[in-house]
Image 1 (tube, rainbow, N blue to C red):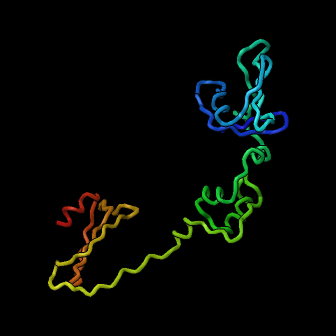
Image 2 (spheres, rainbow, N blue to C red; image 1 turned 180 degrees about the vertical axis):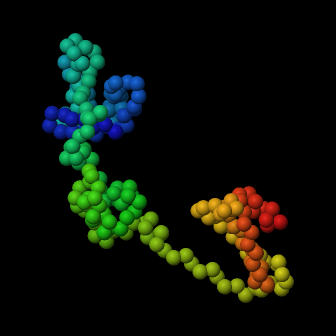
Image 3 (cartoon, rainbow, N blue to C red; image 1 turned 60 degrees about the horizontal axis):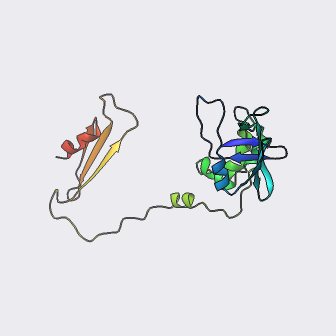
Length: 200
């Protein structure tokens, strides 16, 4: 994305291809024309029109040059006011970019974060599908009337990883629970692939 300053307005252009060793950014007229803009120009200027109004104007790099340029904010730091004129993030954008915080957090985030508006407008009765799904409780397992009749007919197992290794370099633990006798076995593992030999 690139911010471009015109005589009376600013524009946001995307996509812009970045070449690290190139001191200037190349813009394709074909991309602008496919985007619905109209072209008007001569040897002194090239103007792109949007709905009949001037959108961007390119001038020769020097008198008689065939390369046309426009000055941009690339490499400079535009003001917050200029950035807000180019792009207005809405509540959904803030909510997703900051990992779905609560409305109270978004109310206060502008006080502690540089470059954000002091107050973010939060719509009434807003329900985020991701937040709603994440806060739902899991359904309980359905009850069963079948019962095992001998040991090892049904064995429950779970593999657990720990955030830190133990003194003896154990990182995982696998648990087996016999449904008939309720006996449990816990085996410490150094690697996850050791679960198969432990099960055998």
